[in-house]
Length: 111
Image 1 (spheres, one colour):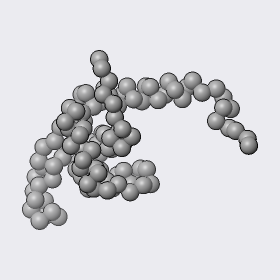
Image 2 (spheres, helix red, strand yellow):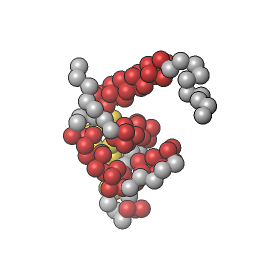
Image 3 (cartoon, one colour):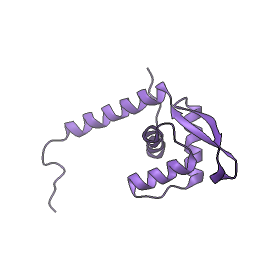
Image 4 (cartoon, rainbow, N blue to C red):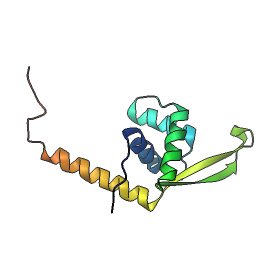
């Protein structure tokens, strides 16, 4: 199976949608990203990444119920698809393999 390339931000957004599990929408994703990574995420960038991930088949979205906090407007909720889950697993496996290949002490350098 051909692996679809994800940029770092797309990977973080996809992971965050998985973390939020059924409660993932734009603002919640941006807030969780900031909470987990310590860096702020522009809501427009989050929406752009969500759109790209949906186009790649890694996310699906649906409209949730109307809420008073949004003036009666509905939230677009995102869920990771099977392809998105497989992609995240492959990325994790590849990163772990690379980390495991680093010889002990290599990351500790003295100048």
